[in-house]
Image (cartoon, rainbow, N blue to C red; front, side):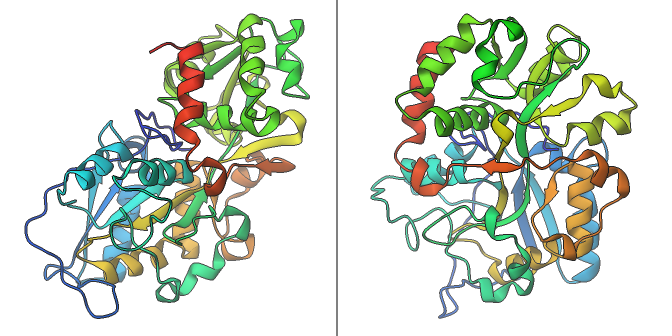
Length: 377
């Protein structure tokens, strides 16, 4: 599961995402088809979040080794995203500065909206020249048709190709509280001082949970719902690690906003499974697909497409799912997962998500309105 903390461009949008070290000299040329020209050195620079490339057996090192074995003339170079997230790239683009990366791995729809809303002169037509990312030629990715339709992000310019997804849910201790059947139920006395949530400004699951409540209660009702949560003692912490590894695992509270693959992690670590029950209030969970995109002025576009196709291969999809504890983006007929993953990873009966059109022009305002009232600025 993507155990990551964001600041600013949530992967969930605004400042939570990923960002990289950037400084490219010279101009990129075009091959006549708008696809750019591959660099001379065969290097593909991929920006991604920390837990993809560092930590306990992450997917990134495996992806690098396997991709380079399949493409002997290529070198995959990881760049870790800085704290500022997608906003870092937007600021560089607005300043006319180059971006020293080809691919962004880990982009979600919130990040994309944050980029499009933040680019100077943004008018809703963010594709093509002047956008941060280029429109993809899906015909150049043989396995693109494996991606499940429900994971598509609704980008009108077709710039993102999903490679995995997670579902935000409630994880709870069944020895302390009953399973919450509805979101409304979380405001009832039975769950007083029980729930841990995350800051929607700085945490991917925190922002996803906020968007889930907006979907459920509407633009005019979500703040009132959060007031009721607050009155019932819900506690908002800065990020997922602080709320899960800290307060929840220290048994300070019996409920936490987390991921529906939590039991995969808990089983592997030998934890008491009664404290790692997965709840889908209203039979829902918030879907948060992650995708890959190519920067507008990437120097190795053809190699980027090769990488995308490789990431959607059956072997790579299984490794990403099991090492990152996320769900594959491809249909089940294209990937084999171990029995423990199949047993402990849960999909909500009704996945919900807000797409590009819902978020465009609204995301920043929603998060700001929520933050002013519930975390202060």
